[in-house]
Amino acid sequence: MIRHARWENRDGEFLALLHPDGLSLFDGGNLCKVDVPERAYTSMVADRLNNLWLGSANGLIRISPDLEQQEVLDGEFNSKHVVFMAAAPDNARYPFTIAVVVDGRAHLLQYSDPVPFLGRKKIADSLHRFRLANTEVFGGGQILLFDGKDWEALARPGVLSIAFDQSYLWVSTACRVIRLFMPVLVETY
Image (cartoon, rainbow, N blue to C red; front, side, top):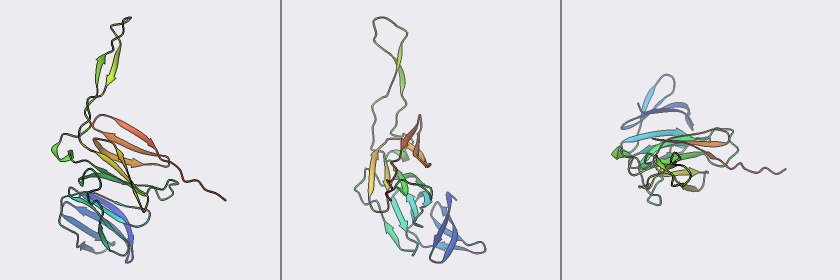
């Protein structure tokens, strides 16, 4: 098993179990296999709108609460290789429901976020000052944020995992942790 998630659909509440080659649902007594395309699956989340998202090396599938399947990544993004996904909390005040990390280089064990290094800073008054230098970034890693209707793409190479909290999207790569502020919906009364 790769991932699991609680998922509520038209037939009730289930524990969705993602396997390397497919999906099963467990209702507390019975385990049933769900007919999904055969792929190398990498990640799964259930969002607050009761959609189940399956990420793979070949794209992203959304299963609605009515059990309708839809292919999502169709070439408008840099890669179809889904590395990781995260669902926003149910009480989030920002518009995004999920975040999806895609990176075409992830399968090569050479992620597109190179390790920074310390280099001497050229300052006349001191030979002991160093600065953090980032090497050239290659590849086309992206974080895709979905608000229920539209996708917003952020260029962020080398992301290995992500997690939402009430105000931020936490991003980790092989060599750094980044905190991205999520804009809050404005409420008017």
